[in-house]
Length: 160
View 1 (cartoon, rainbow, N blue to C red):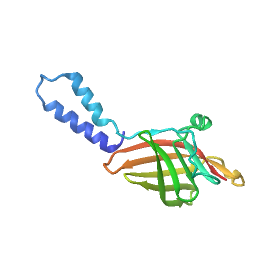
View 2 (cartoon, rainbow, N blue to C red; view 1 turned 180 degrees about the vertical axis):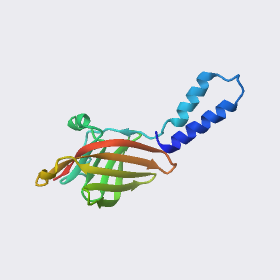
View 3 (cartoon, rainbow, N blue to C red; view 1 turned 120 degrees about the horizontal axis):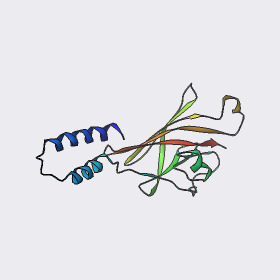
View 4 (cartoon, rainbow, N blue to C red; view 1 turned 45 degrees about the vertical axis):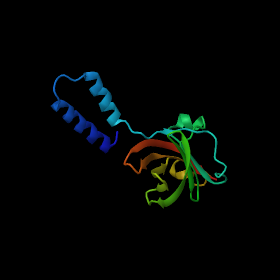
């Protein structure tokens, strides 16, 4: 649950406590749930978009989905990336790729009305840099232009 949803839920609870005692408790719980639920979903997909070939990154939410080839984010090393949001596969343009000194990688990508923020770090081990790919773990945040957001863990690999 993100900070905005927490604030909305707290405000809703305060407002509901000020109402008269003749309201239906079940309706209050359903309304509180609606306010705290994000209208964004990140869905998995298994088919690699044709635009992704050669050097690329494939991320799932965990190692189990990764082994099952169920991805939530794929990208080339250049500027294209794909995610399935609310059941629709969307192509993003990466606008910022920043490799930090601590070995983490930060990526920002946009496609109206969405913006992605990704932070990953290699979990392959420091002595495996000669390999053509690296296992990575991190987090992805998706925001829409209405202020809704969703955060998911990332697990996957990048390489050639």
